[in-house]
Each structure stands twice: as C-alpha cells, then as structure tokens.
Image 1 (spheres, helix red, strand yellow):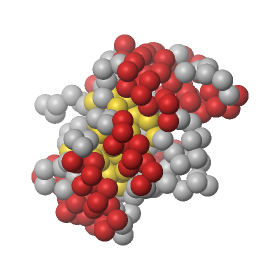
Image 2: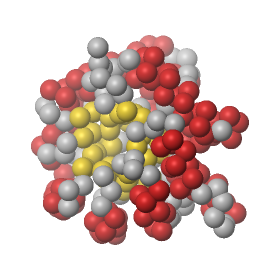
Image 3: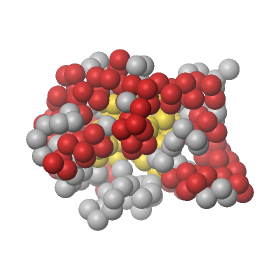
Length: 246
C-alpha cells in the first residue's frame, strides 16, 4: 500500500480577493488556520514580483499562525532569494514567472537555466531550506534537477488538467503515463516527486493514485470552491478524494 499522500494548499487567491478591494479582508492567514484545522499538510504561497496576491508582510504572519510547513513559491531572482533567506520557509519551490501571465503557464526550464540556478539552490540549501523545482514531467528537465541536487521536484499537471477538461481520453492517458513514469524515475534517483496545477475534485484521483507521488499542491480550485461551500468543506472533500485514490 502506498504511503499517505500529503495535501499542500495554496492560499494565494484569498489574497487576490483581498487585494481586489484593498484593506485586509479576506485574510490569507485565516485561510492557513482553517487548512491546519482540517488536516491540510502544508501551506503554499507564491510571492510574485508584482505582489498581485501574497504580499511580503503576509509571509511572517502565515508562518506564525500555524505549525504547518510553508512552501514558498518563488522566481529565480536575487530579490526573491533574499526574501527566502530572511523568512526561512520549510521549502522553496522555484517556478517560472512572467509578469503578463495570469497564472503559471508551464514548468521551469531547469535545463536551460542550469547555470543560473546553481548559486540560488546552493544558498537555499546552506540556509536549510528544502529546494524544489516546478518542472514538466520531462526526462531532460528531471535529469537536470537530479544533477542540480534538489531533494524535490513538483511536476506540472496543467496539460493533464486541460486534456481532462476537453474529454480527450487518449491525451489524459498519455499525460498520466508521463507523470507516473517521471515520478518513478525521480524516486529511483532519490528525488521526492510532488505534483500540482489545475487539479480539481473531478480530475485529482488518477493523479493521487500514482504511488510514488508524496504531495499534491492545490490552490485556485479549492479557493474557488470555498466561495460556495466554505474552505473547510472544500479541503476536507479534496483530502477524502485523495485518500480514497490511495
């Protein structure tokens, strides 16, 4: 029987709603507290260059609010490195970032950025921060992550989610196989595989059933669903679906 699958909840879009009007409501810290109270395993937050949702001052408040590990999603820039070193989250997930994108549109080109990633990863490692790379489930990208010595990779599941939405069963099967194969290869090489992006109640179970995956990170869908059912109910339902798949 595979080990339990951890659920990390990305609370960025609570802050998106807050920032749409200014002020301090709804507070992402309250979201973190709710996630902790219903069995979430971690909090993920992406501090973007343009501060469109999570803001600098949110990070320390989130860390103080619960005992859950904070996974800081960050671009590979000197500014974000300094912020990570100052706050010392449990983990830092290096993601691609373009100011004009609405959301992260794909995996990091770790292979193309290898030389610039080396000093950033080294400094995060020296600070005791667990480094992960958000990459496509692609052998070239995974090979680079292995050579960079990161302990974790998070596979981008966006293409799988798009295929599921389009009812393209052949593509769904192909994407699932790709993620499963790369998860097995990662684990074989001592790298812990995670996955996330575009996961919903409807599509999560085939991903959750991949036995090598240790963690799923899910955000936008849960915050959207919380508008209708409340965050507690949304997280509990996702947790139940993941456990059932295992």
